[in-house]
Amino acid sequence: MSPLSVVCLGLLWISASSLCPEDFTREGESCYKVVPVNMSWADGWMICKTMRSFMVEIDSREEQLRVFGFLQRHHEQNKFWTGGTALYGNKQWTWMTSGNAIAYTNWIQGQPDNSYHSDTGNWDTCLALNMNKQAGWSDEQCEQTNYMLCEADAMSGSILVG
Ligand SMILES: [Ca+2]
Image 1 (cartoon, rainbow, N blue to C red):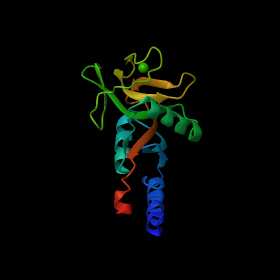
Image 2 (image 1 turned 45 degrees about the vertical axis):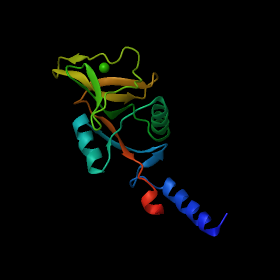
Image 3 (image 1 turned 135 degrees about the vertical axis):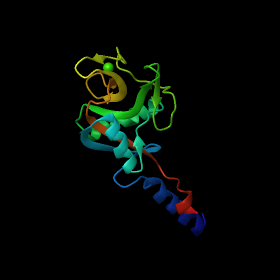
Image 4 (image 1 turned 90 degrees about the horizontal axis):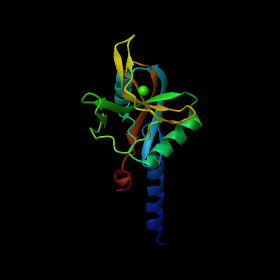
């Protein structure tokens, strides 16, 4: 191996391990950060945006396991907002930032139940990660206040390496 390729490998290693925004944690292909303040879903959307990130979108079972592992290691909170919301009269669950229909799901049994809350006049139309014993997803009224889980794409290393 030439000295040059050793240098290049070194740069690649550095870039691969430090490509998250400040205070975000790298887990697999993405970066995550919990904002440990109880806030409505709409406030969570704004908070993630101000940190150049977006409300978490879970696209696969693999990402689901990574995210729950991350939350269990770092937080004792029960519920966390995601970027999922129900559109079109609750018929289509959608990841709000990407606009993708939610394909992979991990609903707790009996969820989403689209509950109506007569005290507030709201329906359950926002998607939360529920870290109770059943550990899965549930739909909640968007005005409920939960911690926010933001996600950021890991930045490409090609700029640093090039
Ligand atoms: Ca529900």
